[in-house]
Length: 203
Image (cartoon, rainbow, N blue to C red; front, side):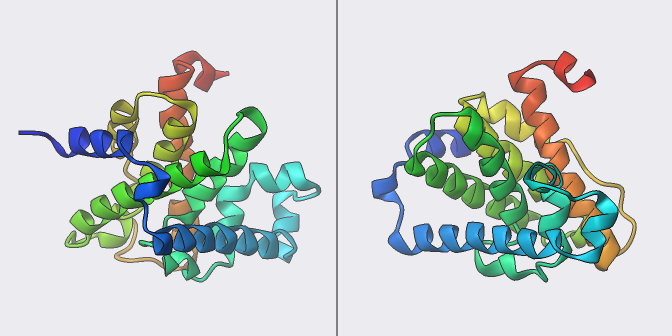
């Protein structure tokens, strides 16, 4: 019997643009646009000055935090609150990879579909809000693994090993900001450990 990880990896390997419904592609585009818009609004706020925002490089570096700050859960447009990790990972990868629009959309769809199923399984948890933060780590690592052609199964497993310590039942503004943005950061670390090795994390 195949495990969830094996099934997810096999499904992703067989995924092609022609198999993705048009509505799903449009929803994925909306998710990315929505997340970028929320980030740009946040980058012009008083809070961003305290974070040290001064140029576009600063926006990219602080994207995980900025994308959460003023989005008001609007990324629920597409399979849950996944836009932070998916969009940040895509934007960071574009300057370093020769990827097409199809590659980006396939990785976004794969990340959304897999992460949404994990989110569904977590929805019955007593600490649902904190448990759900793992999908930020998961969605980030899936996109990066797909774009960099890194072992997807190991990346999923490592990213799901991350779990923020529960602080409150559900989310309030500050706990959401902390847990969602930290989840994205942990997704990056899970990917980097597998792709570059542990020594890159320590530098």
